[in-house]
Length: 419
Image (cartoon, rainbow, N blue to C red):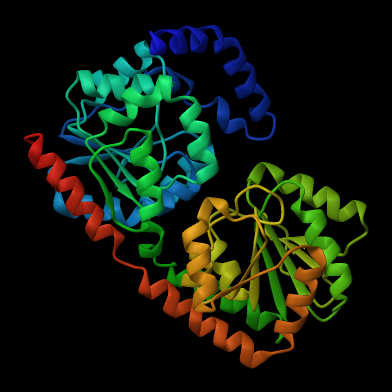
């Protein structure tokens, strides 16, 4: 009955879904492409057995890279179907995997769309990244006897409270999962409390994603062109944070230091450019040119080059953490040997953040003034920066290995299901 009510509400909301797509397409026209796939209509035929991996957007897609590569090695007779939900996720998948996987949008969680999805691709097993729980999708997989595993699963205490309020709807979905690979013991406990069974702690797949050497080389090439100018990076900033970062930049008052701002979402690139222009800041965009001696701020309006920005920077503030948004992933920065500053709000990556702080790879700041103070102190302390850089390398190396553990779990589930 609960799922029936949920489905009815979803059907009634379809006009709003179309309006939302149109609204998003104002800034990203790609939202209006492949519309049929969102309702289970797919043009791509499949001729081999399929293992299905779902990664909602960019972060999950990149995190899935080592696992997908391992699955392709273990199952050479299978095609990997990689589904996403956003155009940026799809673009990231194309950049990372090219034509080596089948790409498609996951359909909306409507029974007819889900049924068409399973009928077209007939996956023999499914892997969901992080916390993608859709009642009709998982019910459809259970009817088709398709074993589904949730991997790289994380669940903050705040999110767990939200899911708990929806337990009346989601309990069967959690219980239908054949296994769960949690990032941490705390994540596993919260997931088990919601009804997930067969929970194992396998670590975070993002530690196994090696930064591309060509991107690190690009960052070093940028750095050489700056002639030794200090660089600090505001990475993956969210709406409202750029103003706080610019407040820190003014307090810092280091004309010799270049600030690089890379917004988290590409649809915000033009808005951040407008903010910089309105405040009279001498900036240029990555899409236009490289910074010169007169550039105060470089706007990173490119996709897929975050490792290059980390390779360029002396240190990085990782966004989503100055405002109560939960923080963004600092693991990539550490893998690139870039010292990290984070704000007070990191509940989306609690364990990774605390481990990085303990290792000395990161420091926590409270606000714009504290950000300015930390940047100024570190840019003037080359030994301190070097120590943080070495700590970042050690922190990243110490936490690798999630891919092998997760692959072992998936293989066990597949054997149990006779796959």
